[in-house]
Image (cartoon, rainbow, N blue to C red; front, side):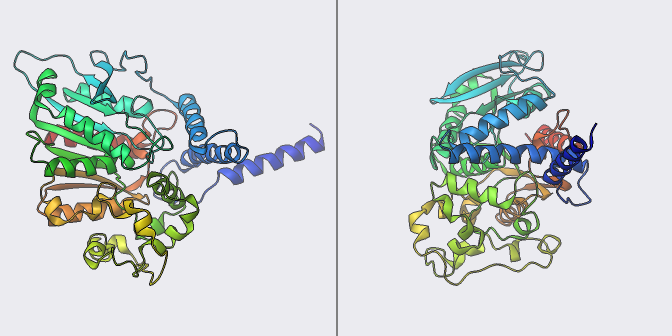
Length: 419
């Protein structure tokens, strides 16, 4: 090799290494694997931004395509996209519940009169990405169905950019009410006393919101017995909690990306991103944001000291005038379940809440666990000191992480013992 090709090779190698490298906490296992994975996601977003600027495609549509290519190339376990199921004996069907597409996983039929558990699952992806029919979600729902003799229903709710809030929530609520109807429970031989709602990230948001609404609905004869929330996103008023500050540049969900997901979901202008990061949308000038509402996400009182560290609340005197009227979703409990009053939380089913130390959403989950407990609800808090956002989805070679496998096993074990 001549000198010029050698220099070019060295420079390209250095450039790639510079792009991939991110300083990560010592607690993160297999850091280079996470760096490469994150670089893949960042590349998908950069490519999507370029295509959007050139008018070739919508940003999110392009990200979806790139992520699907990335997932298909990295997937270590097969998907039941064909309906055959990855686990022998589990029947997989793609149907609709109240007009909403769902995938139903049915374990082998038991003896006569034998009732089974039921789980409704909402996938994550910032209300814009992902599908319960593909990759790890499909694998995990197969596992739950098989190991726990459970009928699992994974909901394919509509997403941004095709729709905004409250449509994804309403899709999930409609599917949940259909699932909990006596006729459907009887059809699938499900014990009405053993039905769970679950979800991760944005899916955890939808699960918490749907659980609250079902709990309050006196017309529902059957309600969810438990809720399992995997690093749920629960509020959009404070993007300066200790976890948002500590993990603002962490894979797989840096702060600016989560803020963008919120703006998309609530149909707000994406140019507001810097304002939200500065908490200008929740300034003291907003009379609608009462002291009582603020107390419901006051991490300075709701978080244990070990998570608060030396951070101080970021409270702005004057900020974006009229923003809460223009984007009412910021204060809507259907979008931000953490804002619900104690009288609502008291009626919620007992909960499992999984949080990760290196996740911007950590404090959302921890605050919700505390508020549920204060309202008298039994809560199991599972915190992973070496966890990061998205790890629940990374259990298949070559992007398998030990913390992800432990998180999935903990989720399944909790359902086994509590549902």
